[in-house]
Length: 313
Ligand SMILES: NC(=O)c1ccc[n+]([C@@H]2O[C@H](COP(=O)([O-])OP(=O)(O)OC[C@H]3O[C@@H](n4cnc5c(N)ncnc54)[C@H](OP(=O)(O)O)[C@@H]3O)[C@@H](O)[C@H]2O)c1
Image 1 (cartoon, rainbow, N blue to C red):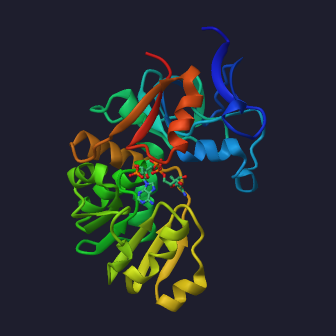
Image 2 (image 1 turned 30 degrees about the horizontal axis):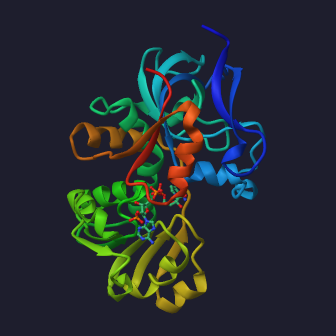
């Protein structure tokens, strides 16, 4: 095995021109880590937000930094203290966002954050699951504590997080409203949404007495969401910190949430995918040498599912 690998890195913060395809050392796993030969990486909006430097205060990365925090691949080495994974396992993960990511031929990840890949999914589909699906799972099930029979509004149902959120909310037995564009109405209804609201033509803020709002947009969308909730309702935003004063004026609870790694939840997501209960839609695929185009697509704000980087066969 060559000691060098290709990785897409940044060495300063800025626009897409700071992305560099470099040859760097293949990392060595620590005793609690595994070395993954990357098959596919997922692109998420956080990748270009980190690239721009927007998250510097929160994440304080060291540069140069390899971007990309979704991966599927094969284990090629394990640290001495790793027991649940072995060389040859097909895995997927949302690796630690504070460290080097998956736009690379190899990646070290803490074994506790790595799960066996859903067998029925392709490498590309599997790489599209961890970050977005864990975000939807944790926001709806753990923070909003969504119950069977409740009414939930999911913003941007055609986005990567929104698509998983619709499916997970339906699996919980909730009634799902989702904002989308007319062009994506059949997509969100096909994922199980009960009602699609065209955000270009209709005013979602006329909805009343909802139990939960899941905000994946922020700004005006968050501001217009308060009055849709019933007293005691819950709002979770993954984009903006909701104003606690406004929340209390409306008699609702509200929080910002940032996704956490969780192997048990990845195992449950894999079970759902293998049971045919969790679909992954791929918006577009690129090579490691096309990261600039992949970021451009993500930055457009109009992807209809996951943007995937094909790293190796
Ligand atoms: N806090 C966390 O842990 C966390 C985790 C994951 C993601 N996020 C954040 O959550 C946001 C969504 O992530 P994502 O991966 O789902 O993004 P994404 O896949 O890039 O979302 C794109 C989708 O959003 C739709 N959209 C855009 N504006 C809309 C609006 N005003 N109303 C309804 N739909 C709209 C677009 O549909 P049209 O083409 O029809 O406009 C498109 O299908 C990002 O800001 C991301 O950084 C946060």
